[in-house]
Image 1 (tube, rainbow, N blue to C red):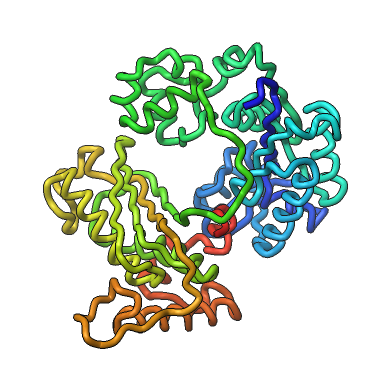
Image 2: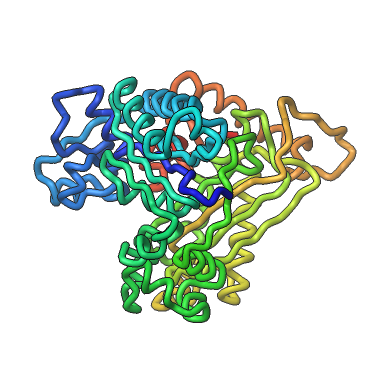
Length: 427
């Protein structure tokens, strides 16, 4: 990795809200929120009142009575996000897109063509503003983690370059929530232990962090707080996996919660697989508890999977197995004593890996026992056919036109899937 601050993190400012204000100039300077029942995104003017994505519309309106709700233009978000990435591609082939509105760039090989890192950052900001009418912040540093933090410090609509000789001094006074992997729940958990800055996190022992956050997360954030990040910028290629997750605060562990959340996640993941004519052999689930302890379970099959119901059933089996391992019993209505944090969930996730192309489904001869886990079996092909029909209807009439009842009528379907999918990697 280059010794200079040649890694950039470019991040569009309040992207969805900024697009709405660009499309309707009368909204500029006003507090707006994309959504209705749930705030999908908020402008900086709304954020000043405490409005944040994910909160209910009622709560947002209570914080900001002048808040204006607007419908989202999802296809416009995707188009503009792609155009921003095309601008970044003009500066270097080493562009790693991490969501619809942000990307890393390694410009070490572009300095002779476009000038200093600061000049490249300013050129990016100027082009995005002039060509698309959108604000973008840029952070530059020696590592990806530092560059991402620098872009957050630069917001809104600015640029920050971290001097390689002053990296830890830059990090130490910043709020711990800027560390990659620390969300609001973890931030509150750390604050309860007196850790509010990155410097305090860096000075915490490995044992203390692992005790507070779990072995994996504790080790990861401890390393990042100490400025240890050896990841390189990797130009986007075809994804090796596809996944989705749902965070929901603290919820009692119930069979219904597990079923509805996993059904929704499986629908999102399987739909994206089929849209790219792909399927996967390994299914992995992640279960995070209210105390931030997390476990993962996976299973690999001989045949690839892309059917929504099959993926749902596999994920349920894996999650129930994980819960049995942790609690010693399977979830009924409520697992055990719900007063303990470990008896509550805060996140469920599904990912599918070991992907293969699956443009058509190879049928099996009816000589083996029928098994829906085999895509070519009678049950497997029936499920695949139903999904294909639903995919066709959704492509023509929108994602909400048809769906499985357990997903469509659950509370986890309140956020439009068009919005959720924008932040998920392409295959």
